[in-house]
Image (tube, rainbow, N blue to C red; front, side):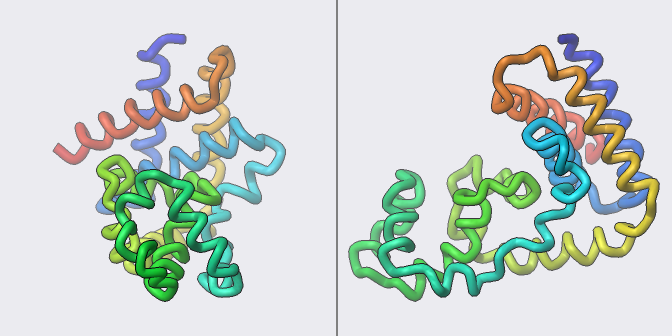
Length: 195
């Protein structure tokens, strides 16, 4: 696979998104990444999944989980365990449950849109910042996308982008490798656009 072909497809993706979101480059990565993710992981469900982040389980989902489930969620992830070690030791279920309401959607359910929306924080292991900014950032992205979501060209452009990327990546063995390589290239292209 040629990196140049991937870069060209990413450039096209950024170009069409800039028509819909000229000043909202923070949405480029989550939209393109989740488009590719669903095209690779579940191509038959692509249309239903592309905007699935809007119908995620509400925090009520976490509220009904047992205290043991919440504790296990933090203990089973070494980075989360380290970050929330004090709360785990004190069994501060209220704080852990609130954090789990945000983090479980990203780390437990592995939503590609939310994961890429908080990619910088995930790479830095800054889970507390994710929790702090979660509602604000998700609400803003929902508002920004809803403003153009009914525009047929947006969904068609995302579908075309995902198909082109998936066909370029189809010869690679690992889906995780594809997504990582794509992620690195896309971040570089968005940074170039912002500079």
